[in-house]
Image (cartoon, helix red, strand yellow):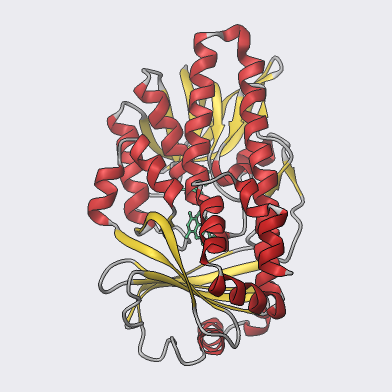
Length: 391
Ligand SMILES: Cc1cc2nc3c(=O)[nH]c(=O)nc-3n(C[C@H](O)[C@H](O)[C@H](O)COP(=O)(O)OP(=O)(O)OC[C@H]3O[C@@H](n4cnc5c(N)ncnc54)[C@H](O)[C@@H]3O)c2cc1C
């Protein structure tokens, strides 16, 4: 029997496995995809993610391959761009590269990584006791473990099997995009074109490749029906207003899509089981904090489990501590995401906020710091900041 079986080898699963394997625990990671694999993502690593990668010991390797980012250029409807500089260096790196570095680091630390799709959980005597998974050849096997970690992303099967999923609120949005060349020089800035209910984002991955994401409501996607590429180009042209468009762009590899951009849970622990990363709730990707939260959450879950092995009598306290940290932090970040949603949805508010950010760049720095872990997320919701931004 393994000490821990982790479902999913993305940033949350790899961080959790790495922390546990380094402490000498017997960890198995089951990942359904063959790495390197694409993951629909803006591929922006905020300040907090960069710090977490350093703590996990892979920061140097990531920096060798990543593109430094200076800040975000926000372009709301009918206004000049607002440039927000990051208070400390952020990075851009394709997820196929980042996730492979992380999973390889977990394997190098001693975690067993196997290709298999988790399909069920096993349960006995009031606690979860392992997972049931199908390997590449289609064979089902049980993986018994003292702890199960669900790090299987948004829409998590483990979260469903634990009975922790709850309906998510808010607008249903979908993301479409891919890697492109030919968008021109972004000067080390992410560009975000925001319009009623939609946005078009560009992130420079290197001198040639740009990560492009177009995020729209589900009704919009339904209208495009079979002509998704044309719809995406049209939306980008409308939001980009001549500054950026797909006219001279060429896609590298396939188009990717993901949605709905919503997934929520009412708890992240059950006896013998933890959820980490997107499996424990998903926030508006516009805010670019998913990888940071996945790395922190995965490592935090790993540490809580490691402490439990050292002091089994305190299992409930360690689990409750993890859950409280996660749910509190998430509640604040969800509110922060709703504010961002409002700015995306209501052009008048977007224009007002942009004008204020233009005049008071320190507001933007605080917001980016709150989203990126440089300051507490509460700072981004302080009445003083919101008042100066919106009223
Ligand atoms: C459109 C979009 C843009 C985004 N942009 C950014 C951004 O710029 N910056 C940022 O920080 N975050 C961004 N995010 C969020 C970020 O991608 C996620 O928060 C992050 O990937 C979460 O990591 P994770 O490890 O929890 O899950 P994932 O990265 O989703 O990894 C889960 C892993 O589990 C595997 N898996 C799933 N089911 C099973 C199963 N049953 N059995 C075995 N394996 C399984 C999957 O193959 C996958 O490898 C974006 C998200 C979207 C959708």
